[in-house]
Image 1: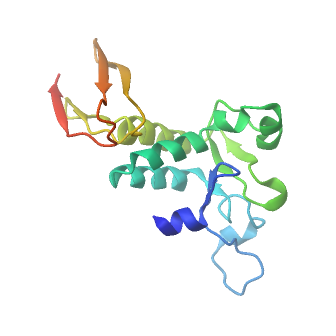
Image 2 (image 1 turned 90 degrees about the horizontal axis):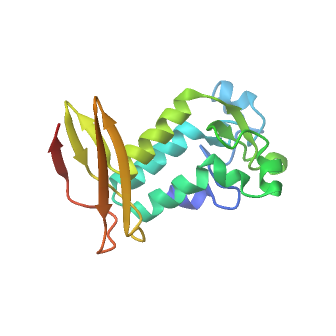
Length: 184
């Protein structure tokens, strides 16, 4: 994870790269990935599936502060907070981009939006791995890994015909909590 932070997390551009440096002038033939320009898509840009997997890994390791920070960082709305940022991002701020470029002249530009695979992983990372809400075989389970700065959060969750208003408090400022189960 330290190597990921040292080489692949680009805070300035709000991306988590798939690899670095990109394939460019090399004898290596990694396949179709080299066909993309250096820093574009999987060739040195953010491949959002993998960015979500990194965030899930931080959560599973109990690093809630980092999981939340990087989740917020890659959230498309963060790429559109200002007119300048939106002009750089160039895609819809309300959908997940499958990739965000890391090339020098295209850094931070979104690509291939409305891609359901990336949005599904984004939802899973946020709801299940950070907020900790999972339903397995009719059992509601909580195993959050949140920011230590969060004092509390709430979830309004519908399951079949019931609506659950769930409030999680964090008075001790911890990233992880003990697992609990609620039967439906």
